[in-house]
Image 1 (tube, rainbow, N blue to C red):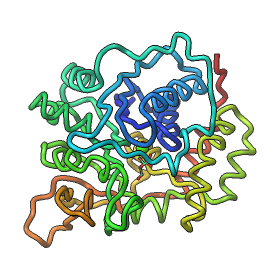
Image 2 (spheres, helix red, strand yellow; image 1 turned 90 degrees about the horizontal axis):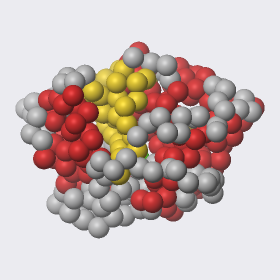
Image 3 (cartoon, protein in one colour; image 1 turned 90 degrees about the vertical axis):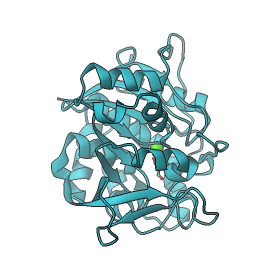
Length: 314
Ligand code: BDR
Ligand code: CA
């Protein structure tokens, strides 16, 4: 099994990414760490507990609270895209207590316990990861591999023309992470997610027809984003975060990737959070592997199989 921590701003596809970490037999999920991003922080924590609950794993995986705002800038949300991130689902939160250890300390400790073994999948802004790298200079070396969902490989952003949300919200953190010496795999928003990780209506119907607690959860948590995505011309729901977990657990889903030097714009006005992905002709040493193509059908089958898992939420 693959030991991992998922660092998340839990809403919509973050929930599905957590399900992969919680239910894929290939995964050994050690902790969930929370970072400010998509929606209100307290709501994100609720969303993570709701996801543990629907997976039937409440009380088994610790949730650590991390940075509640970006390193330098005020927090900006994506509530216009995600609503509350779970389609209005609620549950009795009695006994749903986060672990008292801060997410940054948990990341550092878990990586140091088994140097070179722990994998981290970062599917929100990179504030916790950058802070851990600042606090512990050997954190980056202790982590086996860091899968980052963020940036675009052709400047096609989703929050601005130039920037993808996770890098836009905390560009200083993203820049620091790419300079910190991690072994990084990047799962970009464009063109990868937009071309290959969108589930059209037909796929959503197949998922709904599974009629499991997880498929119902999927349909509900993805509804707001589906509406938003359709309003901007995307033909279905987008799944970058679950792709980041899936490609860690099943690298054969990656059919094409290449070394790049990645840096993130912090000074620009129009280009705040822009990911400068240099493909080898500019004399820069590669610091990341960028995923360029995946087995899209294999990824969809993976999610469908995951959602077919019978669970008995307590
Ligand atoms: C990223 O931002 C959020 O909306 C998603 O959860 C994903 O991590 C895509 O830009
Ligand atoms: Ca996310």
